Image (cartoon, rainbow over all chains, first blue to last red; front, side, top):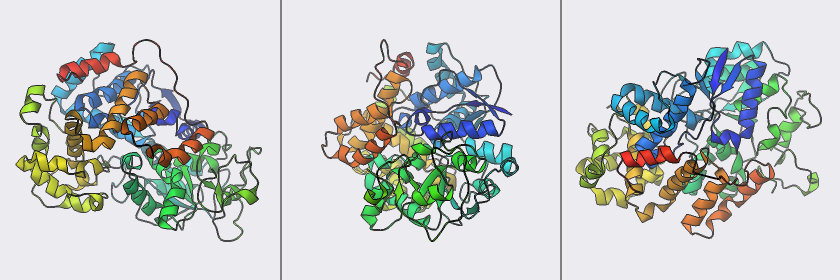
Length: 329
Length: 191
């Protein structure tokens, strides 16, 4: 099994661990990835706010680079925003000959052209549809028993194109999570909006939306995500949100391939787990995570949950750590 | 939503004659059922509901539309586009309104416009987005001294995990200059 791979800008920066975990997991599952040569930004949500043609051209450039690749395969995209931009552009160009002509006229500046043939696939689609829970179940090294996982899908891998899941009641993550031995939290927040870039431009509203998701996940040990923006909103602002609402406990937020990778026995470092911003002490204890130990062992929780949540590579003494929130600084 | 929007890059003259024409075309078939408003996770923070906004678009009420902050509060979750019984794409229509505001340099939408502009400028220069330089440019343009403080804790955390790198200087022409310039020529836009 092989795919062309478009990481996107976030996966080189704030979502490095999503890239690391995706590559490590797919390698373990014997999937070959070929990174698209000289890829550039897909335009994110900003280009459509400036110009429609620019948005088509930025995403189209990457589709053209993918079409030019030596191997013929679907284009795998882990970031939901990149996925939607690339997918929407491919759909628009196929449906609209004038848009296709305009986009090709722009791409001619770089001696590129696009036919619109390439199939754009989200990482979750590939994991759930092409590989499926059985691919995970057959390779479990450390069953994640006693772990409750809240599957969080966000918006743009589900809507507006319902490609691999119910866009209002998604379930594609559930089989994968159960294959690890973990339980799936029953909740309705899976497809709800985290606020996306509101966290930058309309912070109050962003916190409202992310806060509602965090509050609904309080009975879970882990929130699993499939989008860098969802991940950052849910892990990076926990403390500020709980300070505002006066409630809310720290909760571990992992990318789905990190969670699956843990169960397959991939060393935490290869999954980039030290880069996450919200991993609770309870979670670390439960998976007996220690940077020096390449091997994980699953332990039963002692009592209850939610001791303080700290950064993994923190070396300050426990007594000095704060007892609330996801942040140690 | 199954069909892709099929409107085309409009020329400067068309835009100047009626800046709303593209959005009007997109929302012409709106029957004011309010499914978009009921589906919108940001509706409670909006001064006009999405349904109300689409009526004003149909009526061409530029002033009222751009006195409102409603379209800046769209987080592109696509619930409305998924559920619209007329098969319209209100999420993308919101993005079109952001474009109009950006072209018109409407000051009150500074947050959204500067963010989008600084973002694409960054990409024009570097090819791939540099998150750190984007935020620096955005803070500079917003000229609100307390704004960066709200991101200080997150910035520190990202820095301590080496997730944001200091800007690397690019020599020579911006990476995507040719592509951006061609887009501007084709849209007849000198900015």
